[in-house]
Length: 63
Image 1 (tube, one colour):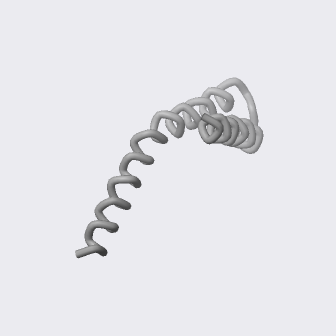
Image 2 (image 1 turned 45 degrees about the horizontal axis):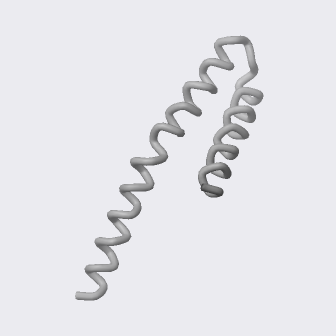
């Protein structure tokens, strides 16, 4: 019984994390695509998008 409650709580928490991260991940993907469209290399666009994503995660963790 206690295990079921813990499992359900964890599942609900993971769904909330997914819900909150989806817009940031989508924005990161769009940024990467936009940079590639502007002539950036795949590696450069990936590095910039990753740096931006990390900054967003850091700012969110500080809130």
